[in-house]
Image (cartoon, rainbow, N blue to C red; front, side):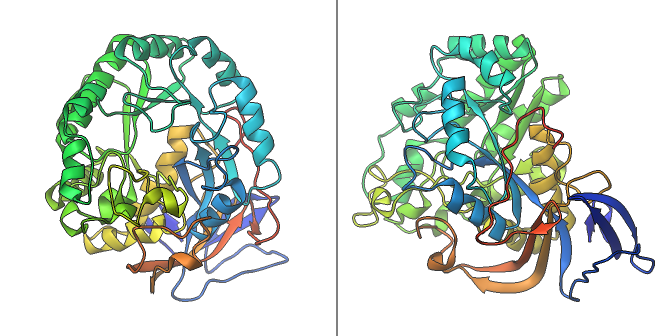
Length: 434
């Protein structure tokens, strides 16, 4: 089994959905049911994905709670935290959160929590959402892509951070500078390099610098979403050294792909910020190794096939988002093992640290007192990604045809195997014991 200290032979005892003991494999506790793994399998804690766009209600044809949570379970993810967009209504007040929770109720195959949204004019709504149990608040510093979720100007971000500091809530930020993007060439046509030029790394770096300074002045906790620009890493290191309360994530697609390999017209790769070059990818991996980047989460942001505009391959017209929930674990593991990382590193990046980010104190580890969220993983088995066999609602993903290492053979939620027609996932709130 995968522990923070390495892969060890061990037995775990589960009672009432909770891990009650971890003991020597040679001296297992007496139990009415005993399950042994095959020689090529390891037991991992269920992964925690804090960056998932489920899109229900309002855009359920893009994805929905049933399909998203089935895909999560198939990929070894036992807890997701849903983003406040692209659902309609967006989760920007308590009434919208109630609508979202009602839509999710009874559909979820894994546990689900919710982020709130910070948008222009809703500072007065943030405390109510916090008290209702959201895990923190998401904002954009550049247009989000949907009209109903507006982006914050610097003064609005400062006001929201000052508000959240009062009850120590977390702000998670899509950090790209709106002015820098507006000044860049507009994306159009089939050229991937031209699309990257429309979202330059400087736009990301400038926004992160702004977030750091506002976090410094307000004392608020902030988290940078989906870091793609490695140029921002030195300022992140310096800010933390100065005591700024800052955490950072990146995503499987920034670790798996490079701009050089993306063909023109391949809009299934479009995401914002974009996938950058191979040297940049290597620096992201080094930052993971050094602990500068805290965690790896999917940023699963699907859409219907038509919105990807594969018919014309135009990056200016296509929706920007990567569909990856089902394959995030093998995508990261495939690249990690090539760079000499053990599976314990992947477990830390994708289970323990996302759980810590969200304050999920019973998730992300195989230890007494934690939920028995378990993944049986065969790290050496390989497979080729067939989009039609993934549990995402729509079969569009840049991982199509990729050969990946690592197969999830079973997923258990609180001590019970996830079964295709039995949605046992709970709707979590921030103050839950989980």
